Amino acid sequence: MTKFLHISDIHLGIKRYGIEERTTDFFNAWYDVITRHAIERKVDFVLIGGDLFDRRQIDSQAATHAIVGLQALREANIPVFAIEGNHDQRESNSRFSWLRSLSQLGYFRLLEPQYDEETEAARFGPWNDNTRRGWYIDFNEVRIFGSQWYGASVTHELPELCDALARNHRDNAFNILLLHTEVEGQLNKPIPALALNKLLTLKENTDYVALGHIHKNFVIEDWAYNPGSLEACSIDEYTERRGAYFVEIKDGKAHAELIRDYSQRPFKRLEFDVTRHYDPEIANQELKRFALENSAHNGDSLSPIVEITLTGTIGFKNSLLELKQIRDEVMAQTEPMGLIFHNESVPREFADASEVAKIVSRSERERAVLEKLIALDTRYHDRAEDLAKLILEAKRQLLDEEDDEKVFALLEQRGQPQKARSISLGKEAITDTFEP
Image (cartoon, rainbow, N blue to C red; front, top):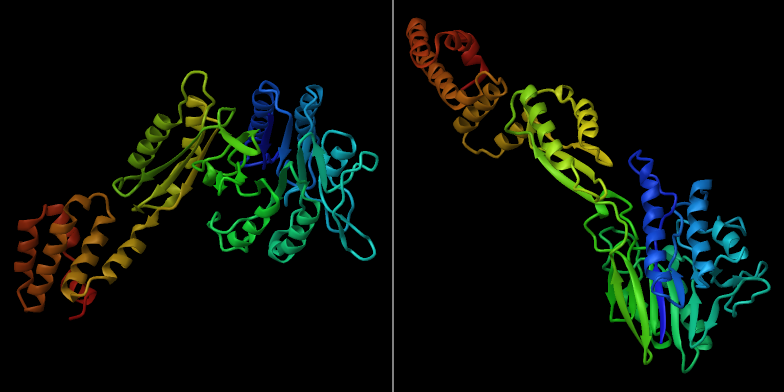
């Protein structure tokens, strides 16, 4: 029985959110998976489905992180077979890349078609240990093929790949193809992807397709397996199912187990509605309390990265939100890995205008505008509806040529004296606000 580990999209060297330690998270995930699920479980080989690195040009730390993991596998006599992904592929005008260098140094075998420099024709040949180049390699009763990153041209290039697989398929063996590509229906983005019916044309000559590129886990017909990235590359991805595949080949069939128990940074993504907090001081106090309650971590577990999105309508200037000060105080007290604020609240006047525009009746629209204008002042917020009705009644009386003193008496009777005087604008001001 043959056992192997299938991983992809490790993204060593990644930098996110200005958090230096985040780069280490990706190394920890990589090294933990290697030691616990490759070395301790004594797999026969490891497959890397592309994007070992986060970018083509990496720093010394990312290179070290890669070599530490690869050296551990080499010392355990576990061979590694890899392909390039879109993040770590070589430049189009260069023959060199970090993956090619690591392959030349013997840390793994980089499988890819070879191209004639003059004709640019692809050569789909076997691995050569002397040149350390090749498209496929045999390991006991397994033949492993490696594709390149095709990008948007994958559909165009697929027939040639299918023909090459048909010519080099090994009978009475387990045939694996490493493929780094988008797949139709698996991305929520309007970008070209390999159509599912096109992908299935590879099935005739392969027993297991080891996918990479998409950062979430999915399986197609118990044949094409995408483990997803080891770590969440952005906070948008944290809810996606991801991991690594521990695969056993029994009686010519792959039995794949998705592994998720390894080092991963926890995320919290929360919303804070500012609508009900009309006073900026209270809003800041409540936001701080909310952040403190949700930023703490338990015992020995990794501290979380917390993202809080401010939603709703805000009744004061955004500048009065003390987000940096709150962040610094919460970070000091609860020590999360990171605290990120996104302010997506809408100024109340914009939200009000949108709501008022939906009102058909002119009189109701007039009342709504007045009520919302009054509510902007925190002193009158709780009485906005009553005061709006009072102003409209005063307006009606003034338009009906009622005596000014009578109108003032109405305001004095139904409102507090100090508020009544502030609202009593005089006949011209009230009637000019809304022309009949």
